[in-house]
Image (cartoon, rainbow, N blue to C red; front, side, top):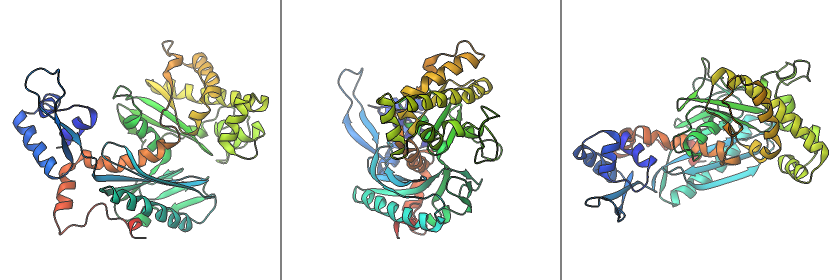
Length: 391
């Protein structure tokens, strides 16, 4: 069933025969599996195949636009957001509000986020969607139980059992990891980009590594802390206690301070750069160079297909990338490395939130049989039950 679901997720104008050829099963087996998926509401028929195909036209299949939904929730330093996506990864409900979360009690943040998420769940339910799981994105280090925030310095949090506030069907993930997964699944690369470094920034700078189509977490789950790679050891003191970390040059607060921007944050910095403000241009040039130095070490070590710049950094790419590419060209030992191997994500600010939501609904793509059993056996609670929907 998972093979069939993923074949439908990856293609358009797909028939039973096309699925059988793709996954290596007989047409009879695929037809039986498809019938089960149709009965469960996970797949729908969309009529005859388009004219021009060879042989008798088959019936086109597609993932259902109703049924399972993934819920994503995001805790930023200055905002909260939530969304619901369907099996296609399309956003079907979304809400966001400003929130000053730095050093705010975790209980208050989680209560507000649960309320915001409940509204999204209700809107999704009105569209015929039912939550599978909630995944919460946090700018911090997450425990291996995928439920506890061990340390989120920009929020002032330590050892926060976050998943417990959203019920057993919830998971917690680092925001940079979710941004990278969104790029892998939803970035429009059609499966061609499977090894890359994804870098993004808000207050701090985060990176994530995708190797052979899978997120690389490291031995303890903390891989990707690019913001604390030293780029100039004699540089300013970082919040981590070291000197000259990348974050002290290319983090949002460092950029705003160097550019002399006091209000409006990222959008104001972009406006200053568009207007040709000298201080803004200098700050972005220096940040791009520092980012390139840090990334050159990652490229030399990992030999990825590409570096992807996402999140708020994508808005500043026209001014950051010249410095990034110049440093990479000077420092990467592989002379086949090209400027076009540094890509700008098309997902922008929504990458983290969409990655959180889609990681939730992908549990159905990965194991549709378990989801079908869960929702059809009355003795078991539905996996979509979460405390945020009852608050």
